[in-house]
Length: 286
Image (cartoon, rainbow, N blue to C red):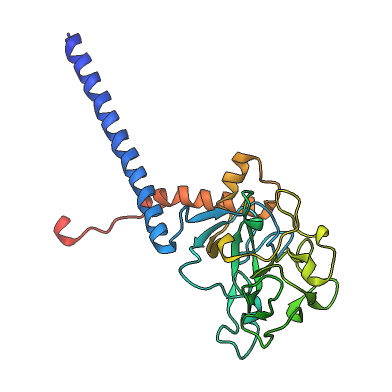
């Protein structure tokens, strides 16, 4: 007969071994997460080093989304703005500029993550069109430069950008007098954003029809201190899981869900595929 005490001892030993293995796996997994986040933090200078895109305001392909552009559900690595200067669309489209032909996420110029009027709402991720710089620190007596262009020392800014609008010509600024230094920004989506820039007053239109902050005020030129980061590398579709969990997944396309599902299936299948590959033994092992 089997001694009950021996069975209980073996059972207890097995449970302890299982707990030990599980604990090691959990510690290993947490360690890998910390290592990856730490590496991204060192690389970008930002924490958290990633943001999930919630809306379709930066989409180029409105039906399916596109790799390279920024779509709802994408995970974007965020570069600390102190690491380098933001390159604007205007600078990237002028042939005599050192940054000519610089592209990011499918179009000329950088994409920035910023707080609307410096507020506490969910930040906006939009493209930097241009930056205005004041020539005086005395309010009311400033003249303005558009960085990287021949427009300098003007009292108001009128110019046409090399940025095509879906419904009319190129984007045009009309007698814009900035309230302070900063960037003009817009989403890439040609239907909902495009030439309807965030700071709509700069185009001569009623600013009340443009982007507003949490208090209902029109968004003004984006100050440097309002910029949280510069959009860097993109991990498509992965952020859709977070949006689904938080109930903000309405802008995620069917194509993104399909691609995410296929990606997950492939990731889960890889270990099994590797295990199924026949091992070639060396002569010494035969």
